[in-house]
Structures are given as structure tokens and as C-alpha cells.
Image (tube, rainbow, N blue to C red; front, side):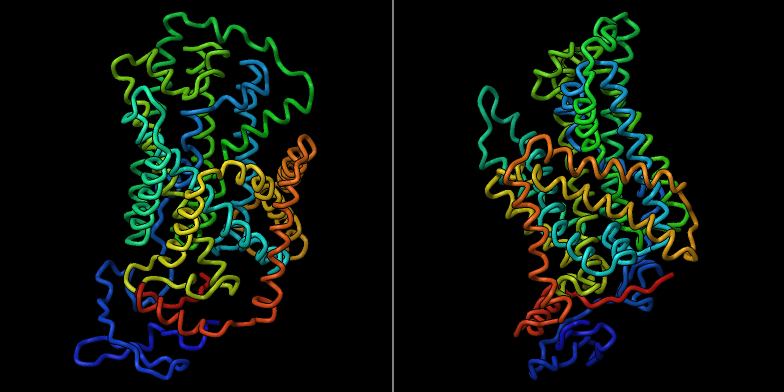
Amino acid sequence: MPPTGTIFYNDVSEVGGTKRFPTSHSTGSALSELPLKMAEDSHEDSPDEGIALKRRVGLVSGVALIVGTMIGSGIFVSPKGVLLRSGSVGLSLIVWAGCGILSLLGALCYAELGTMITKSGAEYSYMMDAFGPLPAFLFSWVSVLVLKPSMMAIICLSLGEYVIEPLYIGCKPNIVSIKLVATLSIGIITYINCMSVKLATRIQNFFTAAKLLAIAIIVVGGSFKLMQGHTEHLATGFHGSQASFSDIATAFYSGLWAYDGWNNLNYVTEELKNPYVNLPLAIAIGIPLVTMCYVCVNISYITVMSSAELLASEAVAVTWGHRVLGVLSFVMPISVALSTFGAGNGSCFTGGRLCYVAAREGHLVDILSYLHIRRLTPSPALIFNAILAICMIIPGDIGSLIDFFSFTAWLFYGATFLALIVMRHTKPDLRRPYKVPICIAYVVLIVSVYLVVAPIAQDPQIEYLYASLFVLSGLIVYIPFVHYKLSLNGMGKMTVFFQLLLEVAPTKYVPD
């Protein structure tokens, strides 16, 4: 429930043509007038329908969100982890394709969950329904405070590096300049997402198309080289392949992280038009498309350079561009920057929705669950996510943070697959417009368990313990503030202040 003193949109009274919010019960003082311009968009955004998220994400935008967040800078800059760990060209290509298949299987499980439980929030909402509030809260605790903002921070740091690097020819870029560009990028992306859902999705569509064009250039260039007879590097086949299960498994581990983002459309299910059709369809289009891109791009890279050259390159796509495009090689750094900006936009879009849904359920402060009264965007949640990302940019060394917390992501993926299996037994009568074969859920659950245990067993470090303790530290917040609903003094006044400042109002989820 919103705290005492919350201003409700429906309570706004009209005085002399100006909309005036009522007096806060907690402060006992009259609030200043706030002119409110009613929504002038289409009927879809009409305030008569209430303050709630509207379904403005279509099939094309859904595919763009999946593809745009899965393909970041990694495939252009450093796709060498799989090749290094698999040991051969042939096995590395099999691993890339296999990781795509596993990602598709996991996403199909999410398609069943997303069409059965149409709330936004992905894992958070599914664990809430299957296991109750505590596991869902712990997921939001880690994701909202660490995983989502840190991923956005590292994406924008990569963007800053590629924007600044051409200005420092022959010398190392200034780290302060990179951080300033990254911070500016976060600000621009957040502003776009706060202003309009339609604008954010159109920008996502544009930048996804741009990165697919860049990938098409790489694939066509590699195909041209193949037709010229440059097959010597591919001809090495499976020579040097790793024979041990552990080495192959770590190669899959590297590849699966390149596919991370396959679940992002489930974070915005409430805004997806006809989710019962478009969610499974977007998954069926987006993930095979990314898989095909990854395999074909790696074939192109290996056609142009040897395995040793690929492993030694600091920016593989740039090296490829110098060898194939010649004077047009400047296209590759621009492509990386565009791809990274698009990934940052998608990360902001989905991260804000998770924060919004968790706050709406009472697991975060109420102001984060409010929407802008005209634009119907979760601006407080988006701004909060941006502030955390900027705070992580300041020290700059967040790579290790992501490394040690990344295993927790697969912990929650596994819990979500388990939720699907559990609800098949505990809630068999729930409507399931799309139903995945249960054997698929068991397969991806086993893979998830391995991906949680493998990095810890292979290289145990104290930081993994710290990450685990951080997850459990959520109990310190959950017990008093969520379970017993303890409220700090002054929260009502603070909520009213930010409502007036940001022009936002409380919302409530209304099922279809």
C-alpha cells in the first residue's frame, strides 16, 4: 500500500482551470499547485483508462528488444572465450550453435510462464507465484541493486571507450573521458526512456537494425573471402579440440553468457501487445536469428584470420575491418558504438520494469512503483536504475563485480525453471496458451545448476562467498520492512515530494 500522504491521480481537483493535488494527510499542510496537462496521445494512452502501463510494444519491437539486448559489443570486440576453451575451430562453432539451442530452450520455458502469468518482471513474478514473496524479494534485491545497473554501467563504459578511442590515436584513452561519455550515455538513454515508451522502442528498433546491418557486412565480407578460396583456417576443423568434459563445459559457459538477454522480453509482458501470441513468436524469431548471426560472424572471422590472430586481437571486428574493408574499416568502430548504445537502451528499458514491479508488490519503496501521469513511463524506477549505474561507473572496476555475481543470475534462472515444474503440479488448472514439453524444463534446470556450481568449483574464491552473503543479507531488509511492513519516519513526506517533482502517481496491476 502507498504510504500515508501519497497523492492519488484520481483525487486531483480542478480549481480555475488548474489541476490541484489534495492536501497530504501526513503533513497537514496544503501542497503547491501543479498544473497537469492531460494525455493528448491516442486512446491507448488516455488517462480515463487509469494510471497503468499500456500495451505499446508490438512483435517487431519485441524481437528488436531480444536481439538488441543479446547482441552487445561482445561479438564485435572479444568473441574468443569459446574458441580459447574449446581448442578448435570446428568445436567452437558447435558450441556457439549449442549455446543458441540451450538459450532457445530456456526462453521457451519463459514463454510458457509469460503467457500463463502476464505480469511484467520475468523471474520476479514467476517466483512470486510459485514460491512466495521471499525468493522473489531476494531476486529483486540482487538484480535491482547489482546485476541490472552493473550491466548497464559496463555497456556504457564500452560505448565510452569506442567513442573516445579515435580521439586518442597512438595513445591510451583518458579513463576520465571514457567515464564522462559513459555517464552522459546513461543520462541520454534514461531521458529517452522516461519521455516515451514509443520513442524508446523506436530507438531500439533502429539500433537493432543498425547492428544487424553491421553483422550482415561481416557475413557478406566473409562469404566473399570464402568464394575466393580462403578456406585454410576453416580447414583445420577439429584439430586441437579439448577432450575433457570440464573444458567443453567451460566453453559452453562462455558462450551462454554471450547469449544472455534471451529473457528480457518477459520483463515487459504487461506492455506487449497480444502477449499470448507475440511473446512465443518473438522468442522463436529472435533467438534463432541471434544464433545464426553468432555462428556466421565467427565463420567470417575465422575465414579472414587464424585462430592465433583472433585470440591475440583486442577488437576482432576492427581487425577484420582492416583486412577486408580497407579504407572503409572505420565502419566497424561505429558499428560497435551503435550496437552498444542499443544494448544500453534495452538494458535500461527492462531494468526499470523490474524495479517498478518489485516496488508495486511492496518490496521496494513505493515511489519506485509510480508512473508519470501523462507519459505512463516508470520514470522513478528508471532514474533509480540510472543513479546506481552511474555510481558503479565512478570506481570503474566493475568487471570483477559482475564476474562474482553472475553465478547468482543462473541461480535465479534455475529457480525459475523449477517454478515452471512446480506449478505444473501445484497449479495444473492455470490457463497455459503455450505449453513447453516438461523434459525441456528439466534439461535447462540441470544446465542452470551446473552453471552455478562450475565457476565456484573450478576456481573457488572468497568473493563468491561475499556475493552469497550479499544475497542472504536481503533478509535483514525483508523481515522488518516487507514481512512486518515497518515504515521509516518521513517516508510519506518524501513520497509526496518526489511525486510533485516527477509528476508521478501510484498504480495498480489489473489482470487481463
